[in-house]
Length: 236
Image 1 (cartoon, rainbow, N blue to C red):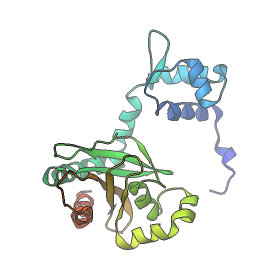
Image 2: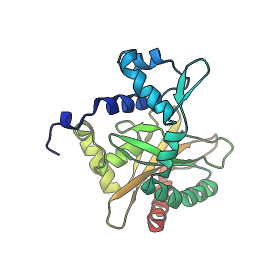
Image 3: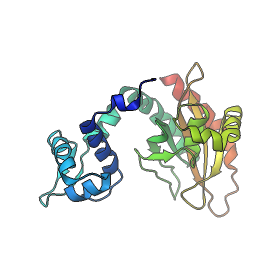
């Protein structure tokens, strides 16, 4: 769209969305003053958006007057039809993979400039890796994010400048493999889930760690993951 982005701005809506996005990363309830500070507005500017979101059921208000997100937003995300179909198609395949190979596996979809973690299935081993569903993963620093970026579905121009050759390699080889940027000792390896026309739907990634005496080679999981990815696409 060529029109100036300011033409599409609705101040009250922008405030409400800024508020929800900021509160999504919080673990504890916050007061109206803390909300205002968090989104860089005055208390008077956030009063009406907070009251509206509370009335619509997106915010809980404690007896002490602190606010937290309700489950309504997560419910909307989970019922979004394309994601719902993908979740349903992937769950059985990923659960079977986790059981057979004792590896934790997660599925990410593009979300503007990040990878949105849609589904996480912990492995069946003694020690398991578990990720938070609904988390937004950095496109620069994660295997899932780079896979999605390599197929052109993330809006992040600077990514192509800094990782252009690596993204090309991901497209050519059909996977990405790297040490976790978040946790020491974890290795991530992922593949794209592609539709029949070759367009990417999601990135499926294993977060693996090596137990003592374990001689496994993570890259041996690539063809297995690729088969799983095709099975998921065939179910859609």
